[in-house]
Image (cartoon, rainbow, N blue to C red; front, side):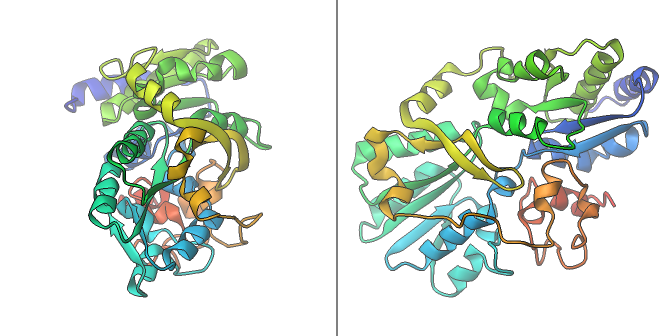
Length: 358
């Protein structure tokens, strides 16, 4: 959607005239976080409106004990790990330790752009155990499912998936029930909604009385979504609205949903900043468990996160802004990140640093 200055000014004027008082709105998508920072939306909005970043960055919500287990596996003989670029830079509980560092120490690690690329690597390197680190929400889960089915069809028995895939709804439910939670409305993630449908967020107004608007990713999309949230708050009539109809339908993508139903079961999973959440992760179904890396390599995790001054867990749950972390811009920078929020291209700290929201 091209930026229309006159239209944007009209929407901003309406927001200023409508906002009923101090409100806090949360976006639950890393792409929203980056778009908000890049376009300077926070500086445009009236001071009564505060935008918070939620658990919408897949790399950021992956807890350090999971990264530690990945790092341990990376040093196993004949194991080749594959994943998206951001995952290679995420540190575990030990400062400076990451897959990039392990690669420098001799680990076999490759960056890929599609899960199916990992299957091709497995077919071309039968002497290796090729593991795909599948990180993401419902948006990327169908593509990961396709890779597993491709591996089964083509007989890539040396391919396996380490599923770090997560579901948004259980995380939001847990967040809302957290002590001190103070969010007045949600900008719901357009990418996830293309798969699960706008109705996947109906529980927010129906069960919790919180306004919810599915938003696109251009600056004007986000301003329009904020305007709708502010109007709902002013009218005291919380509801679900789809402000991204060019990509999102009420019911979502049934083909993608069937892919998820075919390949995955929901399970208890660990989240940075939110601990463990029932039915919030996706694990391979029993008939596909020969491709389950956690099962193949008997993976185990530490019971709790290691204590650290990094406040990524607080940033992604709206408890503090990036600049509220004592490490931000000092010990933690994009060149030497301490936490995943500074690593990920969708991280709130990376966005704040890159676009100087300080």
